Image (cartoon, rainbow, N blue to C red; front, top):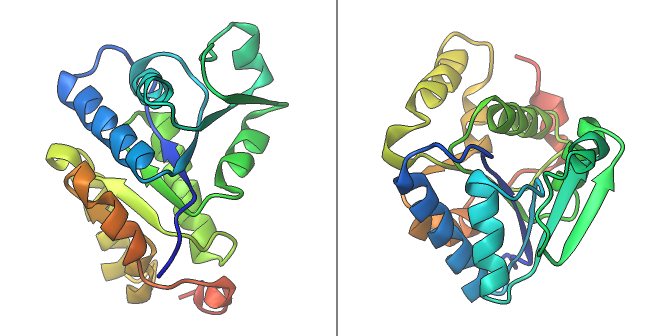
Length: 195
């Protein structure tokens, strides 16, 4: 059985979203802390980032924020997290978010979250990133993206096996099982990245 020590969470910084997203984020944080899983995230203090960090800190979990210097300069960082890594730019931030992580989970979010998720899927297709990618499709939030990815496969922009690169869950409580049961993936994926 796979051991899960650290999970990267992609999530939004908007504070104006529906309460259901905050509730789901709190449940994700609870599950991670209760399973002694450390968390890496974007380092922010508001929106779902803030809820994730607040919950983990309050429950004495371990969370590391990774934030580019220009965001740190305007003090977007969470002040109470265990560790904060300041990077020179967004590219370094995204690279560090994926390093030393046993899985990625993408919560609902805006263009930044979508961009991070799609980059992770792209790197997995190329065999650069090989860990589970879990998409929390709360109340169908990600339905249009999932349909687009399916269309990419149907229209031969991707192979059918590429559908194994991510796992979609509807509820936070499915996260651990989804990580443990994610299809095996390795660096040999580069050999079938092209269609």
